[in-house]
Every structure is written in structure tokens, then in C-alpha cells.
Amino acid sequence: MLAPLKNRLLIEREPTLSLEERVAQLESANLALRTALRQSRQAQKRSATLAARQIVALSNEVSRLETLHRAARQRVEVLESGQAIIELGQRLMLLSEANAQLTDAAQRVWVLDKTLCAAHEECARLAHERDQAILHLASDSRRAQKYCN
Image (cartoon, rainbow, N blue to C red; front, side, top):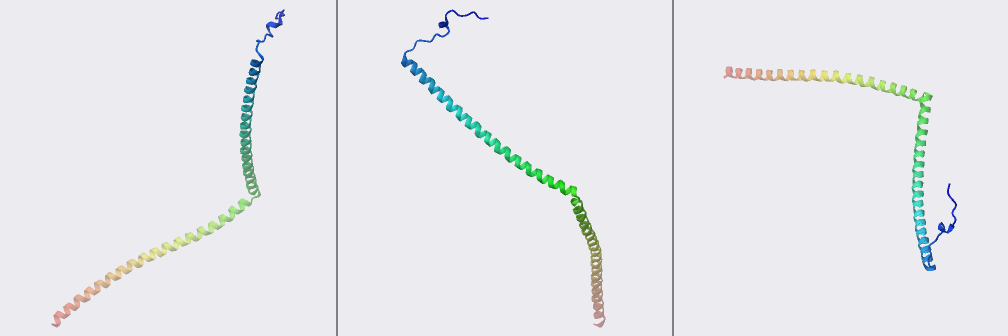
């Protein structure tokens, strides 16, 4: 416990300043307080601006997420209704039919290719026989000319 002071002037002692010094000191303190207040207000404005930007960004993110949520909810409803399975079945049937048509077409192309190759070989064989016949005919005609002369 503290002992009571007998002389309070020891605590409350103020330096003795002239009136002009005291006014100058108070004006200086007032100017410092105004500067601190201005800086504090500027910092508060910056903080408020930053907070406003963050609020706008968060609001935009919430809107984007709500849109995604609605789209996902609609997709889930479509899947739950069975409509997606029906559509997939219809697409499968169409694709199966198209696949069968393509298989048939590929088979026809293969047969036509084989027929074309066989026809080409037959053409080559006939051309060779023609050339041989021409040569044989030419040699026969030369022999006949020799005998006629």
C-alpha cells in the first residue's frame, strides 16, 4: 500500500512557462493532433475503400456460385427425372443404326475394292495377251512376207 503524500504539489508540479510559450506549445500540440486526425481519416477511408472492394468481390463470387448451384440443381433434376437416360438411349439407338450402316458400307467398299483389283489384274492379263497376239501376228506376217517374196 502506498503512503499518502503530504505535499500534492510534488505530483501536480507544472513547469512555469510564459503565456506566449504556453500558447505556442498548445498550438503545436493542436497542429500535431490535426495532422494525426487527418492521417487517421485517410487511413480509415483507405480501409473503407478496401472493405468495399472486398464486399463487391465477395458479392460477385456469391452470385457466380449461386449461378453454378442453380445449374447443378437443374442438372440433378434432369438426371433424377430419367430424361437423361431416355436421351442417352435414343442417342445410342441412332448411333447403333449409323454404325450398322457404316459397317455395311465398309463391307461394300471392301467387295468393290477386291472386284476392282481383280478387274485390274484381268485388264493387265488381257493387255499382255493382246501384246503377245500382236507380236505373234507381226512375226507371222513377216514370215508370210518372206515366203511371198
